[in-house]
Image (cartoon, rainbow, N blue to C red; front, side, top):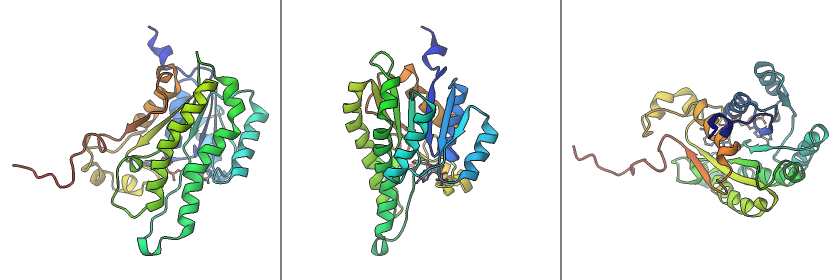
Length: 265
Ligand SMILES: NC(=O)c1ccc[n+]([C@@H]2O[C@H](COP(=O)([O-])OP(=O)(O)OC[C@H]3O[C@@H](n4cnc5c(N)ncnc54)[C@H](OP(=O)(O)O)[C@@H]3O)[C@@H](O)[C@H]2O)c1
């Protein structure tokens, strides 16, 4: 068994939405290290995209856009289609969150979050269906990896109603899309990250030591944890993982003790 080949992304072409920073960028760096020929990144802020390209090198190509609208998803797919005949890997990572107390939670906080976190992954995958089909076969499938969250698997204490619902939705949508797209040689899976430093997770970014105390692994997630999971799913190693969610959270969901457990000592 050739283990380096098993985890290699040699020559693959990938698109990572929200690849300009945070978790998306961690995945981009992993894909480059695993041998991707080109990694497209997309986000709304052009300056941050350009800065990331400048730091990571010319295998990274920025296409600005908004995946929170159907037109934005179609425009992004069209721009990729103008440059590539096929797309091996799509990571639907771009995400948004909204917190407000129950009494005042606004409709906009539902629309924005559901549009980016649930509708975006669906309509971008739909728009890229042809390019993914061109890359994939039953023997060597193309990959769609949706970035969910542990907040879709268990409650968090914050009043982020639409976010938590959107992350449960994307994990279930992953299964439904996987059931259809495997017919076309496209494998759909999800990753549920725990706490990683980012603009969205300011607690992990600014108070990592305190956050770590509540995690069974006693640390927050590192870029290697996220890159490792994404490379596994994207490479030959993950070909037989279909519709599943890989939880990469240091044990919060599956090895975390209940809040009310009493220490007998
Ligand atoms: N960090 C964590 O602890 C954690 C935990 C669980 C799950 N996640 C998930 O991981 C993913 C990445 O989050 P992150 O923590 O890395 O957050 P982040 O630092 O805020 O990054 C979000 C990325 O998505 C892009 N984005 C947001 N809205 C967009 C839109 N409408 N169209 C295109 N791009 C858009 C952002 O760029 P622009 O603002 O320039 O558009 C940015 O590149 C999200 O799906 C999030 O829910 C994160």
